[in-house]
Image (cartoon, rainbow, N blue to C red; front, side, top):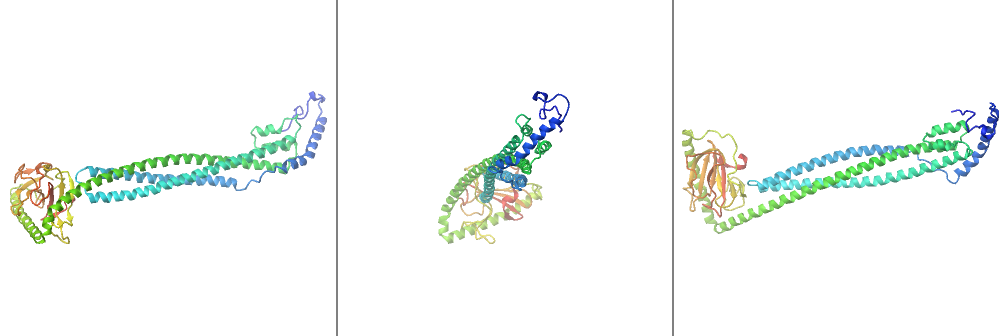
Length: 464
C-alpha cells in the first residue's frame, strides 16, 4: 500500500524536515536511498549468493510427497482388508478348535474325524502364520518408510530455514536500520507473494530474490506434504503395530488351544490302543489256529443270521398287535458315553467276518467304558429280544434288541445278564435297558452297538 508522507519510513519533523507540506524533499531523500540500495543490490546478491547459493529444489519433490500420501492411503486400505481377512480366519479357527475340543470331551469321539479336523486346523494355522508374518514385514517396511519421511522432513526444514535466512539477509541489507524492516513483514506470516509485492513498491526486486522466494514457497508446500505424510505414516505404523500384536495374541491362543486338543486326542488314542491291544492278545490264540478261527467266525455268522430271522418274526408279531410303528420319526442317540475302540466298516482284525469287498468287516460301533455302565435306549421303541443269543457258540453274548419301526432296529451286545426291561416292553429314549459287560466273544467290558435298517446293518452314525 502507499505510504503517507508522515510515515516514519519517509520522514518526520523530528528528523529536521520542515513541517510545511511539500513532498519534494521527501521524494529526493527516498530516491537517494533507493538509488544507493539499487547500486548495492548486485554486490549484496553476489556476496550472499556465491558462497551459500541455495540448493536447487527438485521439481518432483512436491509431487513425490503427494504421491507418497496417495500410496499410503492405498496401503492402508489394503492392510485393512488383509487384517479383516486374518480376523475372519482367526475367528473360524478358534470356533473349529472349540468345537473339536467339545467333541473330544463329549460322547464317543470319532478319532479319525478328529484327526482329519486337526490336520485341517494345522493347515489353517500355517496360513494364519504366513499372513501374520506378512503383517510383520509390512510393519518393518512402514518403520523404514517412516524413517525416510522423517529424514526428508528434517532436511526440508533445514533447506527452508536456510532459504528464509538468506532472503531475510537480503531484505535486511536492502534497507536502512532506522526504517521499519521488511524482515518484520516477512516474519509476521505474510505470504512471499505479499512480501514481494510490498518490497516491489519500494525497490526493484532482483530476479534471484524472486526465484529464492518462489523456492521458499515451494519448500513450504513440500514441507507441509512431507509433514502430513510423516504424521499419516506414524499413525498407520502405530495402528499396524497394535493390530499385529493383537493377531499375535490370538494366534498364540489358537496354538495353545490346538496343542491342548492334540494332547486330548493323544490321550484318547492311547486308551483306545490299549483296549485294542487287549483284544488282539485275547484273539491271538484263535488266530494262530486258522482252522479254529474260520470255524468260530462261521458259527458266529450263522448264529447272527438265525437271530435275525427270529427277530423278524417277533417284529411281525408285535406290529400285528400295534406295538411297533411302520416308520420311525426322529434320530437316535448314543446308548452310553465312552471311548470308541472300533468304528463301523472295514477292519484289519481277523476275528471280524468278511462283508462285500472287505476281508473283515465290523457291523457296529464298539464303546468302552467302566464295567457296569448303564446302557440306554437310543430311541423310543419296543424291546423285541433280551437274553443270550440261543444260537451263539459258547460263550454266548447277552443281547438287547429294540425295534423302533418296521425297518429300524438297534442291537446292544455283550451286556451283563440282567433284566431292567423285558421283551415286549415299550421304552423311551434314554431309558436304561441294561449294563455294560463282557459276555460272548469279548475280551473286556464294552458295548457293541449296531443299527439294522431294512434287514442290513448300517453305520449307526448316520442316524445320530
